[in-house]
Length: 258
Image 1 (cartoon, helix red, strand yellow):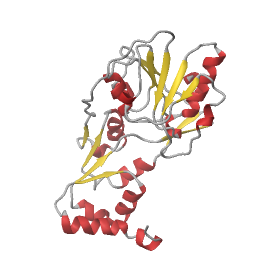
Image 2 (cartoon, rainbow, N blue to C red):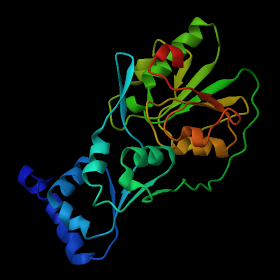
Image 3 (cartoon, helix red, strand yellow):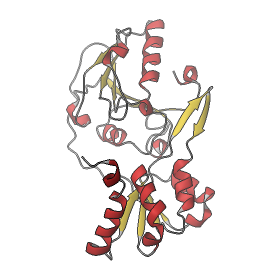
């Protein structure tokens, strides 16, 4: 582990490594505190090199039933608009918004949709009722709180649909006991790709998220021909439409979403 003074020199170390061992390399960057520190101190260094920026989604938060955008990444893209040569994303909507807000990026963006060629397992036949499968990170971005509210509403409406939840927390803290008052929620632990989940011909995939790009789990579910119920955030509508799934209009009102 590095002490504080040594850790503060990591941006300089990264720049010196590029300078001495990869002088002509194309540089790829994604928004994070480390890249903020690097660009704050060494922006002129990167202006002389081809810099490609990965931009997947803007962050949002809800306050008093209003949806607000966290502008930190836009500030970064604006501050270093003369240093970043290309911006690449996995969907087109946020690039269109970027070009509208910061016109200098027009002609300097590229959408590269994720390519998937995984093995598609056969859906086994199941007797009995339908069920919902929810699989993602159990972090606040993915709205486990909304999932809880949905489960409570299903119980109130006497809808006997089970929700099987797969995943674990990565960025936040989460306790599976959060769903203890929802007997219709069965927590199954972590998972490794949707192929590891036993979908049946009575399953539908439920996806909740406050903000997103174009999630890999939705691409996998679509490839497996599993019915998808998802909120319309980020680039989701570039995959799911009213003709191919159940696309729920985004709202800051959880009651409306449920």
